[in-house]
Length: 56
Image (cartoon, rainbow, N blue to C red; front, side, top):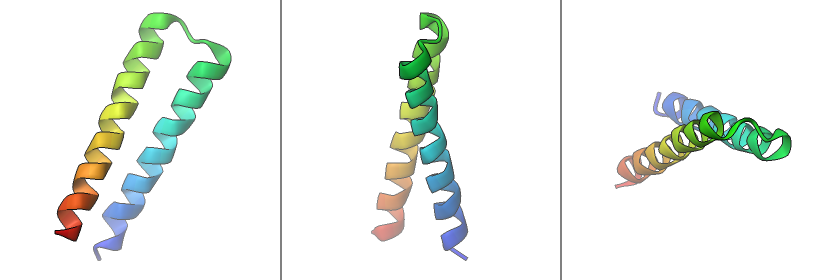
């Protein structure tokens, strides 16, 4: 049952990478772009922290 949260984390990670890619490619206006980048980096940090906690 532990695989399901990891799958969700991977999905959110790829979603945040996709958002970053769209932001770089199409140049969404800067305020919205910076908010999206902060949210996606927060998701990445949360995913990394959760995987480290699962391994220990």
